[in-house]
Length: 224
Image (tube, rainbow, N blue to C red):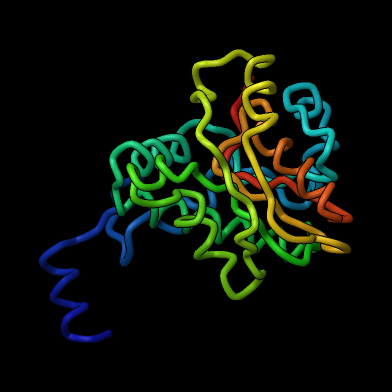
């Protein structure tokens, strides 16, 4: 450990976001990370769970993986990152995502060739300054899967303000895809899946572009 790192630790100590015990890096201590109520990767495809089938409409996706439900530490982290651009929240989310992704890879779920991150509309990206999905998942997947910049999104009404039927209509024409995905197995990555409208609209385009298999992937699923 370098002298500068030791001094930084002494001057700016870091604490676990859950239990407040000292940690060497922003995020969670190992016991708190391991205690999070995450989905079990050995379950495999979450679309095979009856409770998830009834809540999420993903007819154009072959499978689904996620870290956990949208509450607790994950919800706080996403809100702090998206609404307040808190750097420590991005570190925490990357830590959880890397932990969960490693376990999914150990279970060989899913087997894919490339990832596509759900984009922000250009104006929203300019206003926010970053895509929170790329800032979290991109850092984890980089070097393991090619991330294809083929998807773009136009500005639509905020999904949070709409009911289930309106969400489906709102997203039906939101995306465009440039290029071919012929023969590829694709991982579609988003931060939160609430009804499935957004990620399924993107999956439809991937299917039309020739993708042979499409897995939805999210940091969180919104509970009913």
